[in-house]
Amino acid sequence: MTNPAKPIRERGLFITIEGPEGAGKSTHARRLHERFRGVIPLVLAREPGGTAIGEAIRTVLLDERHREMSAETEMLLFAASRAQHVGEVVLPALEAGTSVLSERFVDASIAYQAYGRGLPVEVVRRVNEVATRGLIPDLTLLLDVDPSVGLPRARGADGKEGPRGRGDRLEQETLEFHRRVRAGFLQLAREEPSRFVVVDGTLPAEEVHAALADAVRKLLDRRGWCS
Ligand code: TMP
Image 1 (cartoon, protein in one colour):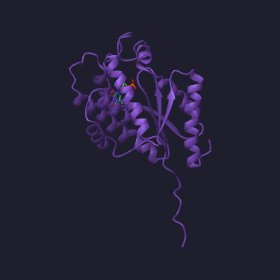
Image 2 (cartoon, rainbow, N blue to C red):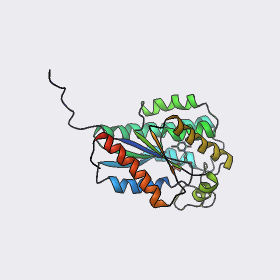
Image 3 (tube, rainbow, N blue to C red):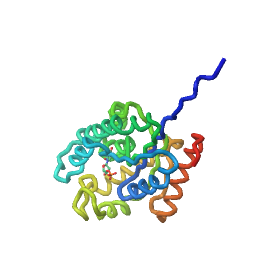
Image 4 (tube, protein in one colour):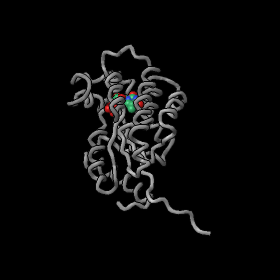
């Protein structure tokens, strides 16, 4: 009997980068993209956003005037942005053999909307199963930082949605809220040690980058892809 034909192209890898506010996700995502895009076809994406519809939803979510937004509305809007992102960008890329590095995914909804806002974890998971069509990251890089360090950083960053110093609607939440979010991320990492790699976001940037790049390289090695 002959072996089934090997597919010409393998599915791309789906890597997510997560963490509490001010952990350095965007900077490190950009650096990883620069480092690996010459090794594998790789696109950089972000949530909420990543598509025209998703960016419009992002504006609604982060607008500081929308303080009356309920936890359920918030969860559904993040999920709606995700559904569009998965359908329009992530799945087509993966199916074409291109890998995707996404700033944030379902873990953010569990950390923020379940652990932070208090919605049941199972409800957030179920809604997101619809949004993602069951897609699970191959690797999740969790940049960990205590919110007492990260939050002032995030609120003071340039080029973001909210007023400088105050931050966007989520960044304006209390330190207690952001502590629950961080605890949620760490709990998720403990529950799925084979998917998560946790890196201390307070280390010098070069050390953080080296640890993140090492995790990506190991994933490529496991796939048998030259890195
Ligand atoms: P960002 O800071 O990564 O751009 O994300 C914008 C904010 O949205 C940030 O405060 C985290 C929050 N967020 C959620 O609360 N739930 C989600 O599912 C996602 C993707 C982000």
